[in-house]
Amino acid sequence: MSEGRIALDVTDGIARLTFDHPRRLNAITATMWRALAAALSAVEGDPAIRVLLLEGAGDRAFCTGNDISEFDRLRADPEAAARYNELQHVVADRLRALTKPTVAAIHGHCLGAGLEIALLCDLRLCSEQASMGVPAVKLGLPYRAEDIVKLLDAVGEAAAREMVILGRHYGAQDIHRLGLVHRFLPDQAALHAEAAAMAAELAANAPLSLAAAKIAFRELARRDAPPDLHLAQSWADRCYASADYVEGRLARQEKRAPHFTGR
Image (cartoon, rainbow, N blue to C red; front, side, top):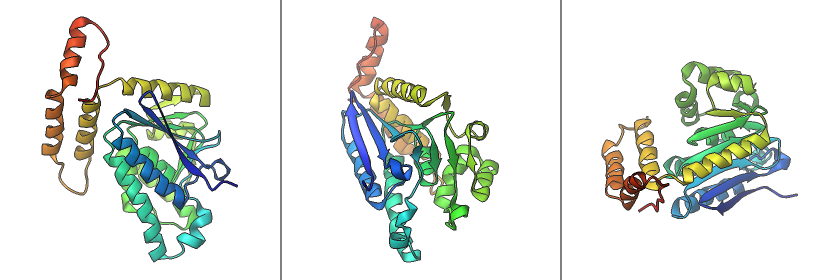
C-alpha cells in the first residue's frame, strides 16, 4: 500500500495541495512532512502561483495530524521526538512566511497537526461533516506552547483550554461556537465549489497587496518579538510603487476588471 504523499497541482494561478493518505485518514508521515516543506517552497518561489488551496484526499478527513504508526520507530524518546518535531517546525515556518493567501477546505476529520496547519491558513472553510480536535491528552503526547498559541490566537484562552485539556473531537455545532472557521458549507461538494470560487477570487487580486496584508497581519500577531512595522511599511510602499497600483486605478476609471501582474 502507498505510504501517502503530498500532491501539488497548479491551474490558473491556483496551487491545490492535497494530503493524499486516505487509508490513514490523511495522516502525515515523516516523508510527507519533508514533501510538504518542499511544496511550500515551490509555491512561494513560483510567481505564476497566486493562491494555495489545501484539502484532503477522499471523503473522510482533511488531515488527522501525524501518522502515529511511525512513532515507535521515529518518535520513541525525547531526542527522537525533537528530530521529528523539527520537520513540523520547518513546515509551520514556511506556511507562516508564505506571502500568498492560503485557504483550507476542511471535510471530515481535522485533528492535531492537521488542525495546526489549518490554523496557519488565512481562510478556513468546512463542511457540516467536519470535526476538529486536539487529541494529544488521549495519546500521552504534549501539546507544545508553539501549538497552543495557534489556538489562542484563533479562539481565545477559554476555548483553547477547553479543546486542549478535554482532548475531544468537536462537530459542526461546536466548531461554529468556537469560531474555528470562517464559513460553513452543507456538504463536501458545496465545500469544494466554494473553496474553488474563493481561490479564484483571491487569484484575481493584486499579489503585492495580498503579500503586504499577510505580512502586516503576521507582524501584528507576533508573540516572540515586537512587530516589525518597518517591514510591514516597506511592503506597503512596494504596492504604492508598483505597476499594479497604476493598473488598479486605471481599471477603476475605465470601469473594467483589473489585470494584475505582481509587478
